[in-house]
Image (cartoon, rainbow, N blue to C red; front, side, top):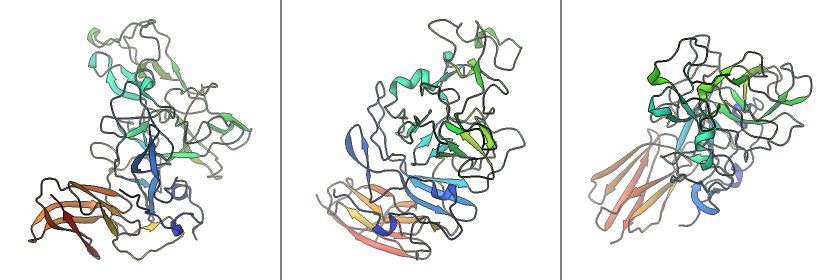
Length: 416
């Protein structure tokens, strides 16, 4: 299958908007020239980085496949493989502090790196004796499966990082403030490991220090901030060389003022992108660049979290408002443009939508008699979609793509 160039020269260089540079709009690592990712040293067929960056007055919509532009893999002791995720993340442009009960940073993606790769929390989803009490530290129990960039794929093929994404930015450069390398789903930025020494922007540059410390205990029979003993059945393993402190998230406790960051692993501070100040998360590493708990976000978010990105099926948002595209060409007239390859086909075809296409496209596959065979709702521009034709007889088929405003049709030839 030939490589489809989905971005024209006009889309290669991002320019300053009339409203000025806005970090949540212009901080993304964009796909250039339809570039594909590299998986385990081999060229893949999945477009890499962020494919489309759209925004309105309330949200930024990031279309991505969850594949970075740098080489990823191999993953030792991990049978999973990185796969196309077809994400459309929605991130608020007006984040606010949550003054109520903090929202727990749950399993699955809790934010997105600037290259369209998912951010996971510190937990590996397993616990001691499957009791759900002593949660396993992903770095300890899954670290062997991390690649050189400290990422790995989940069971559904979602490539992600629990810890500092070493290939996304230069984590060895302690001479200057780290760049924005991600956005949490409460809308606040995530910076690399280095920030201004003081929140007001003074004091030079330093590595940000987590305020979580290991508890002083021998037996795992109480939880952090609790003096009540657990039921014996819920005790964790005694601290030992087999189960040292740090194996479980509950081995850590927040110590106010110990480090630079709060219980969410961030602080309100001045940054190069926000000279007036903003709440920001920082990834945490030690002096040898090893990840330090809680790695990215703390156990809870600082801000409020809208629906659509988290939970089962999260990250596949439908765009309901009129949006602008962050490219040199603004206010593009809506249309639908797509290619079908390979055509003719013996089994499977791929539908490739051009980035100028309208959002939320309805796709429909018809046979030559006009019978509707399959529907594909909420298809998005810049994405590729596969259609299995192996179960259909040889003949002529039609793929109809349409919105309420525009439509396009292409013929598909199915061979024996």
